[in-house]
Length: 216
Image 1 (tube, rainbow, N blue to C red):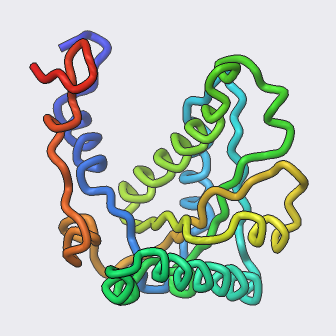
Image 2: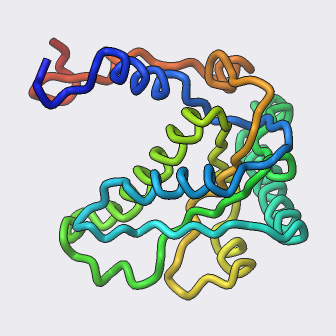
Image 3: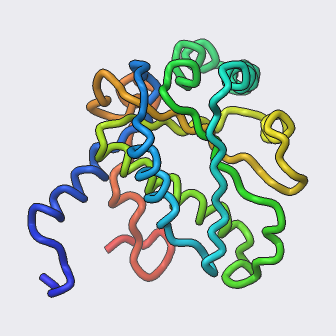
């Protein structure tokens, strides 16, 4: 082991939180203590970002009416998604796809305006701002699991509608509605696996050597 590595127990804890992280949809109400919420947001803020642009912005939703309006936007998109799924629409409508009205905290993760000014690392891959925000969300997710809190990423909404509702400036873009809070239990497997919607694919089917499609 490298001299810069962690202890066996510390490494085990890191791999465990990665393995047991779940995209949660079922919450038990309750609350998130202010100091815990700040620890989670600090973890998100410590994420890597291309060119150190730190393109994450988080909006904490505290008004019940605003939460209900966001829920209505999600519900509208849920129905549209069901129609787009055609033969699987009935099965889809049976899935619980969000927990906006049940979670203790609701955060909106967004990209700011003015991102075009950041060229470092983005000249040929401008989407790296989105990748950087995703890293921040993952940090938040893992930290939440370590704190015993569930987090669910909801992407089922029309971005312009959410942007207008939250008075975002032109060019800013909402990416995720993050449901956060206590849960009665974590899913033993991803919820979509438990519900028979999808199956986890093995790593070896996605790992190539030297050329696309070539396996060791």
